[in-house]
Image (cartoon, rainbow over all chains, first blue to last red; front, side):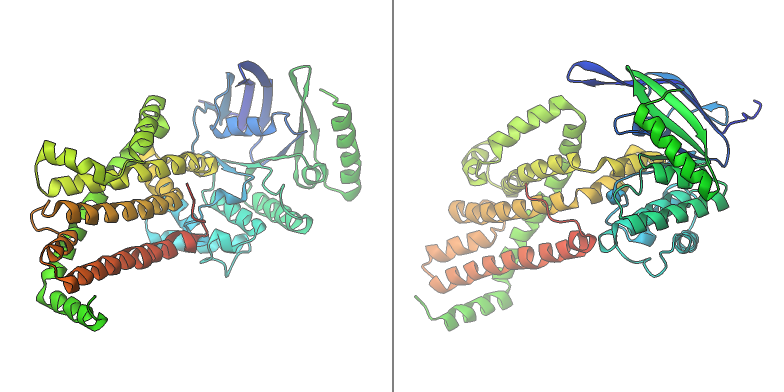
Length: 253
Length: 227
């Protein structure tokens, strides 16, 4: 099979939920393609279907119709190709230490065959996310930001094809969020990792993204508008204004 | 009322002689056996309840009926049906532990944060691995809660059964020791037996469960769930 130009293709995804015996449409005919190594941000208001789309991509929810393809191959269930970092601080296992969480991930997925190998790789990734010295801490002994670093490390250590991040820094204070944004961007760029990052924060999307997808709903229809990210400070400022206008006016492509 | 020193002397003599110790060990053996049987049944039933609504509905009814029923009330019926033997005592222990444990575990399995299970699915763990690596740890506060509750009920029921019905099992047990001491009007031995009951209760509840709690949920920062 010829290799697809895109690492991820989302084709005609539709999803609705049954709420109090009524079908509520969340996503209608969503089409999206993501290139390898791209940092894509999905931006939009609450209830717009951002998280649902991410959960479908991860394989946690089944779409009503449409297909997800990774490297041209249809994806049907959760697997190690696409790994998720959740919003919840409590996503890492409280009964394992920082190191223990990462070692468990490596051994359970057979990314390491011996405990010694897993331990060495755990130390390495812990250093990458600036948590040295905290290897033997339990999650309840860490701050929310530190827990999210562990979650990011736990996902990164698997070297997935695609990493999904569902508002991972939304509940953090401004300075912690900023430092985690920089850290995430640095690691994802260095590892050339394809990242899909959901946020409702325009500044965060502008800061991180190579490309931004604005997801909104108009008359029960999902609208996508795609804009390119900016590198320069002036470009970012103008992009922020443009995005605010789009989101405020609910402009659709 | 005999002097306290004479009670302590009787207690130490009986322990050294091995009579009291043997009875206590017999009671502990029966309770341990009942504990393990309850754990296995409760685990299977609780998982089935979380997965199948019909089983959940049946179990909820059974819990509502049997949980408030003191085990001791079932002893005459069990004696009529099964005769005298250690089996009755084990059944009594299972009855005492099973219902609080199932109630706690059903609540515990339902309260497992979805992100734990989703992460398990994400890293391609199968159902058994998710159970072994994630669910059993995540329900630990509920497990301890159920075990402590079950232990209290089981210990009280066992001693009461041995005291009221005398030699129910083959050796007798600590309750039977107190019962026989009462028959022979030996107050020192009655008190020595009661002290032994208290000591074992304190060791299991105050030391074993407290240590287990400290080594697990307290260390992990998972507060104890009250159900």
